[in-house]
Length: 450
Image (tube, rainbow, N blue to C red):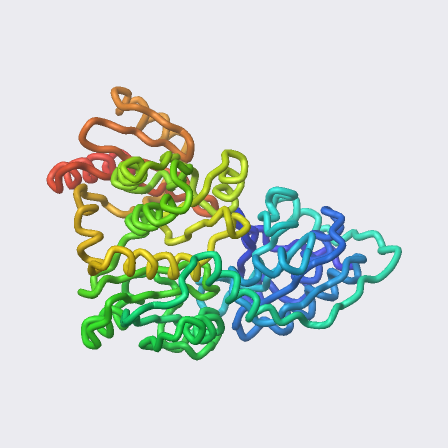
């Protein structure tokens, strides 16, 4: 067995991503699969993949690794990440390995991995330890080789499950434009729209891992331009944009204006609290003050949480969270296996629009009462030192170190977080006036960058 070290930088905080073939190839995937099964003693692994051109060879290597280490493999073929999470539960896998690089450009591939019930793999083994075991490549031979089960087709069952969960049987007469970015939502949405009897305005629904039209990452505002134009030109009520693997979804209103992820959290929280009054709603620490205020106004318990799906899912389970939303447009549903799901988010937005009977712009307008910088990155090589310096400068504020450092004052607040993979510090700042926001942004950035 080769002892070549695997590039440790492909092991991110929660997932695995690298460029093919220099960082991740068949041998790397084979060893990661063996390492995961070996370390966690898994016996039944659900294996899926997205539309990337390297998927087939990496899935084949993954299945070989799983079965050589003695676990059975249950392939589900082409899938979105939400459908993969559903399949791990439906098919009673005690693990899942999905070959995907999410929203990353075409040259990337990697894994999203889970344990039973689609719990993130980092709850069972850290990516640092997984990297060590895979790099060493010293695996004990299994007593028996695992079986490759017949491929399972779960699409129809998944569509039925999400429609039932959201309780949306019709989209009424809403005109909806959807950009799937040539990603995996192009597999899901034709069946979903057929189910509710609605005809969407389609942008880039052909599944194509080369991403020929634009990067499948709705956090990059330039990728939303075709959708914004289409919504305005075709007089649509709602614009929807998915990322490459379908777990994130962004929205634009009927005027083509983008809606930030934290505002979507506030809106959907209102809908979720109708189903479970008084529930705990989680929102990530970068979110506007508006989110907590709106959750409380709707009768919920507002709970700030750390950033990142592995951490949010863990905190939701531990603290009884019902719904959670991130600024990055991930939204989590405890009654759908504590997973992030772009389709359920979309369905609940439709449900909200139908219930309110108002344009989305009118629903969002009351939320635009503060002024937020968005996330700003700065290169910082001594992050602990810089955090200490900021604490000293802003000692008069209210501190939280839930995720990085949050300092809150009467009229403004900021959060700084270190990147998990780069020497970067990420700043989010909000104030009650635009002038104060600009003043404090300049002030804090000067401190960070000096």
